[in-house]
Length: 392
Image (cartoon, rainbow, N blue to C red; front, side, top):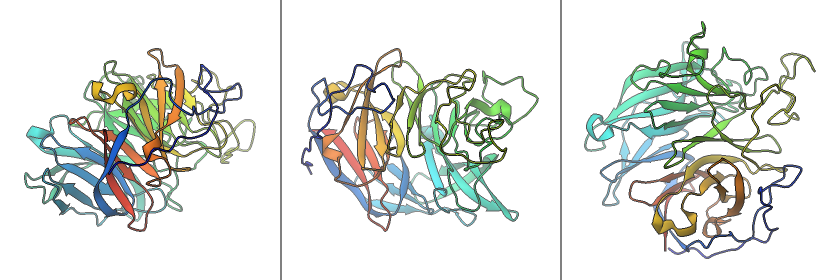
C-alpha cells in the first residue's frame, strides 16, 4: 500500500543540524528531493519483533523478544522455525534481541543472535551461533555461547543492548547496554556499556582490537566504551565506517562515529563527584569533563526520541535518500533520516513522511540485498509487523 505522505511542521535545519544547546532541529522538508515511498506489510501478528535479516535466497528471518524465529519464504509463505529457547531470559528490555547472518551464510547456513540467558541460578547476555536447515524448518545452536559473560540487569532487564552486525573486516560487532549500573560504561573490565569486536569463529578478540595487549581478557574484546545502551550499528557503504546508535536518558539519544579505543563519555556513577555505585541519569550522555570523551555526531536534544536500530540507505533508485542514515524511533514513532557528510558532520535531519505516526514504534531498519528497506515495528500485544519499503 502507498502510505499517505504527512509533512512535519518544523524549523529549517541549521547547517550543523543542531542548535547551540544541542537540541536537534528537524527540517520540514529535506534539502534534496526524495522519492515517494511505497510501504507494504510482509508479515503481521508479531509481538515485539527485534531484528530481521535477509538471506541470499530472498528469505527473511525475523526474531521476537520473548523468543521465536519466523522465516518468510520468497513466495510469501511464513514459517515458524523450530528452535530451543528454554533458557531464554526475557524481562523488560532484554530477551531475544540482535540477529545477523554470517557473511558466508549461503555456504555455512550460520547466523548469530544476542539474547538473555538463564543458567546456573543466574542470568547474563550471550551471543549464540546457530545454523538453519535448507528448508528453514529448524535452527540448531552450534556455539552456545559464542560469547558469554555480558552482564544483564536481572531485576528489571533495563539496558540490555544488544545489536550484532559485521564490520567490513569480517569481525562481529556487539553493542551492549550498561544494565543501569553506574560504573559499567567506564569500566574496561566489564562487557556492559561497550561495543565489542569479536572473531565470529571463536568468540575471542578480533585481530586489530585497540586493547589487544591488555592483561584482562574482557578488555581485549572492547572496541569502544562509555556507552549507555547501544541499540544500533550501521556500516556506511563505500567507506566501511561504523556508526552506532545509542538510547539516551530524558534527553540526548546519540549517533556516534566509531573510533577504536574511543570513550563516548557516559559516566552515571559520577565518582569522585558523587558516591560510588550510584546511577545518576541526570548527567550528560557525553560528559565534556571526561578526558578524551568523543562528542556525538548527532544527539536528539530534549526530549529524547528513543532511537533504536540504524541503517544507511544505498542505491540510485533511492534518489535523495541515497547515503542517508535511517534511525528507528520509539517515542513519537516513525523513522528519522540523518544526512551526514564524508567527515562525519551532520548536515540535516528530517522525518520520513510515509512512516510518520502510521505504524507505531519502529525498532529496526534493514536494507536488503534486493534494494528494499525492511522495518520491524515494536508496539507489542501482537500488533507488530514486518514492513517492506521501496521507492514508488
